[in-house]
Image (cartoon, rainbow, N blue to C red; front, side, top):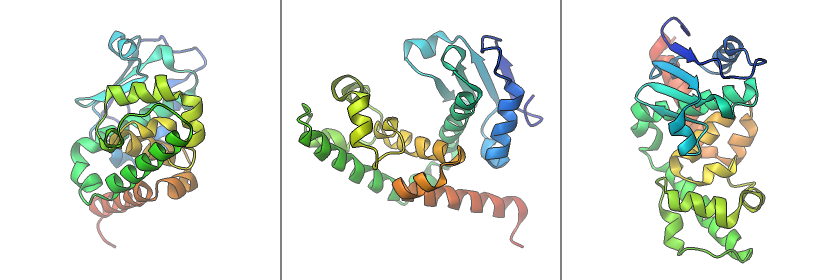
Amino acid sequence: MWNGRINVYNSKDLPEEIDIEEVLSDVNERMPSFFLSNIESIYIGDIAALERRDMDAIYENGTIYISSTRVASEEDLVDDIIHEISHSLEESNSLDIYGDGQIEREFIIKRMKLYDLLRREDVVLYPRDFFLNTEYSKEFDEFLYKIVGYPLLTSVSMNLFVSPYGATSLREYFANSFEKYFMGEYEAVKNISPQVYKKIIEMINNKEENAYGDF
């Protein structure tokens, strides 16, 4: 039981050198506990559904599912948990996160810059409007992974996204920046994704005020 209420199921498929208790303690040290409010359980194991979808982890209905076969280190597992916590927050804080349109605007501007940069690299491109869709698209994901390729994507998007996967959708743009922030890369998030950085600070301050009152 994590933090007295979150059930953690570990199928023991993790590498022996990974201490799950240390991992959970590390997450607690990195981020405020009130960001865990939507998490009811964590399941770590050889999860066929994640393998079929080529995914490391996913958040669904109060549970974080993590593929143990894809965890390389304790830091990797901390990273996965924090990333999925960000998606859990979208479930109950979507209006607070995206309601003013600032993160979406920032994301679309970056997508358009990415379009221009890829065109300069003579990459075969979809129509410009294809880059305006902020929702996750398997077609767009495969375009980035298979046609562009992550080495080129990493190179051209270095100052646009904190990681290449942040280019895949608005939600992943937020989640990747949230993840990097709580992994200690504050300046990178502030410089590359300033609207997400601002929103994270707002969320922390608002949650603290609600939890402790205005002193």
